Length: 543
Image (cartoon, rainbow, N blue to C red; front, side, top):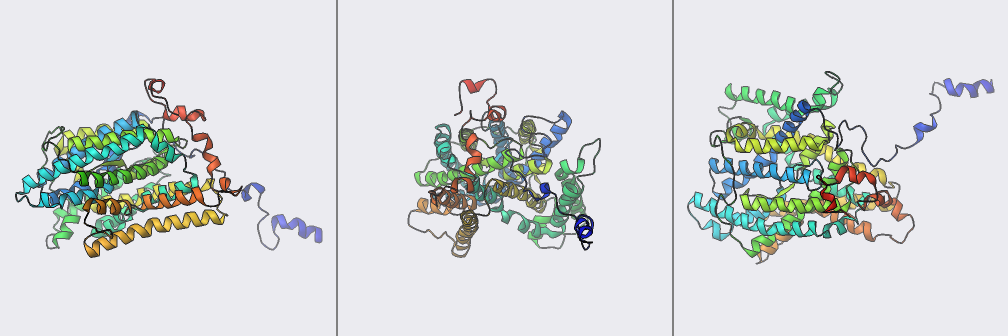
């Protein structure tokens, strides 16, 4: 009987299952490249699919492209026609910058678009006494735009110098998987205010959009046509088309006739003012608002925003490389990408977009959603940006998608990027108290410190730092209002100084996993993913 009981342990043993296999007890192995990606950075999908995916990336980047000018242009005294022109300009320059970044910069499938980091110094320029003293709205708009242009042109030098000189690569070499986790994660989670709060502004449109996105992308992934995951891969296009049509039916049906003006602005599909104001054909050109105006204080404040953008883009580059199934980018590649982003900010200043540039977080999330990390898809998307920026009326139609629909898209895509950041924990020792402290403390301060700065600004009308030097105030307030920058600084400092004398520290922080990626030449895959085209690596070698 004893022998039978022992044997029954495999089959019954009191109704319990058999002993688990040894393989089942092993943790999931850490992987340099993300598995399950259908098309990696160097493997483009068929042309019809690539074009549709490129259009989907264009739709996703429109959110930030429309939101930022819609917020800033009225404050500058601009009309709907001015707003439409600024959006077209921002879209045009984003297309050029994305092409440059994917071809000559980091070579990662990253969209370079508008940045929220530049809003605070831009608002400071708008509120300066020199601009507010101009009574005519149109003159005030043009003069303010010229001041923003001058500040952006000067600020671009920061990223150009740090990037192309290789100085930023020196900083990035100190990053370990542990210190990268708070940076990458809060690049997405730090934008939480753009998510469900935006959905709630018109819940009858935003919530159905969110539900449709989750259904098509997650539960519909097994529905395939010709062995292609149609609903998963094109979930954004399908869900946006359905809910946008539903919102239009509510609009023309008179559902918002007697509602509050704010509700109408958020819910109606005919309230953007872009379609009627945009020109049929308009090609943006440098200094279209006039020559730039330079001011030392404003330029320094804008340089602080450029530094924030630099740090945030570094985190997003790591997320993009993960979702593109590439190896972690060597520091020299990150630095090269930052240099080209600096050129992008210079173009922002020359053309007059009213905003700086950064790597689009939402488009990074879309790589994870579609499981397509192809570089060609993003280059096609850049073509759509340029095309629709020139054909203003057609571009304005897509740009008039109600904001709650865009906010629902953000909820999904920012979540993917946050998950991508947390995935770097696979290289760390999570049973180490050092790891727990650095991770938890940096994440908490990364959310708590910017929240303090934001709440103080809302209640007092100015940031916690409020001296007679307005430019100094802007610099400090811009830096400490960025969740990824605060979290990244805290994590990098602690990870580089805490218990460094202990033998286990290097392994606990996962630093040894990235040793082979700290130089361009130590891993052969770096050549495959990040080498410049046209044999340019021979003339511009990466180290």
